[in-house]
Length: 582
Image (cartoon, rainbow, N blue to C red):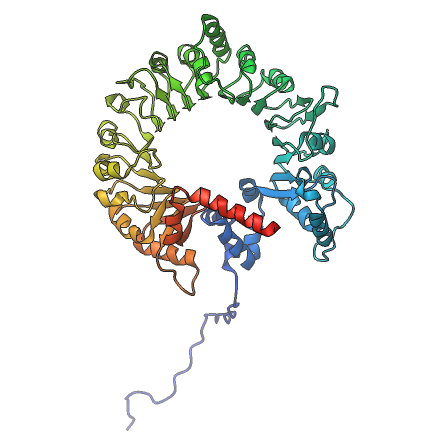
């Protein structure tokens, strides 16, 4: 009988229709995944790195080096270049100039030390270096004006006669040039200028921004810059005044420094129909300038009316302010939106005219005071949103008239409580602790009022020393999202308290500040070590270190805070120089 149970025969294998996968390629060891990132991401990363960190990256990856040399970052940086007109250029300097877009060129030939036997021997050794050979007899000025460079901005530091002889009329060979600056310093051999000297013609068709600082050492020259719109100028002689008169019709921004009162009387007779920004400074002021006469008022009225597009004005010094302030307030109020005044002493009757500037959006007063009366009360600036009072607490009273201010910067004093009470809409607040009077008592009494500013999201603390510690006298401020320490000295141990004070902080920025430590970590990079420690205190916060921010031993920082530190450092430096030459 046959068993009908399960079959014992082997099942036939099914034919698969799935194609087997190709064997995986072995992973390449050491592959640089940075090369897969787009340039935009690398630009963002580099913006967050310091200069030293960028150099470290560029040494480990060729792609980073390409980013460093990209036009984007070349435009954001400057290539400092020191050479001597008339001398040949080596291969390394050629490559630097070929990559540069912004360049600062210093002419060593104006220095007496450059022509000594010691430096002459050092230059001979340098030019015989096989690693940096001199490829030809091409001089620096011939290469600079060869027509092959991509420079868009260049600043020359040289003397007037050397600029005239070596640069001359060759500027048009810099075809992409948009911004040009000259610092014409006195040479070591002395410079005698005569009216019969050959005239230097500064000519370029595309330059829109031009700066000429002569330090009272210029000779005959003439400007042929038809595209110039921004002019930084010093007026010490008739050639300087002629250059301004010939350019006045097309200027949109003008910063001018005057050395003699007679040029003040000349400049107020000119008309600037296109001018939008005007900054003026009289260097050699009278100790007690005379008030305006009716004739002066009439002239300055005509001067201000001749600038119908004026939006920004900056006045420096008492004499220049007394000359123009009345006319600006009475006849420039319709278009003027930004006003800055430095180092001026006002009569109260004159300063009261500032209330005529109804369209003012920005006001900065630095080192200003009223000499014959009290502060202005209940000022009415309906559009004013940005106010800066730097060492000028005697000008405006902090009251309800400033209730619409959104951005405020001032020097720490006893009015901080009034600021918090009368400026409820403050969003950005900067406090400068570098006051002439001791601020420790004010910090202890009034810093606790800052949490009353409900809309404050950007706080900047400037000039703090290690013994100031304002965070010890304040409650938490959850509204603050961006905290900046500018030129501060902060002990490393204080950051724990700071993190508790700003629980919702998104950005912590240190600008030209120093973090002080007691115990130096061994075997690690100090900057990276303390950056990691800060990240432990601020895990959800972006840390930004800008400028010359660094870390130093506490003993060094305390020595720097000594009021005689600069004098001691100068004496040590002079002693070192004397010791070398002995």
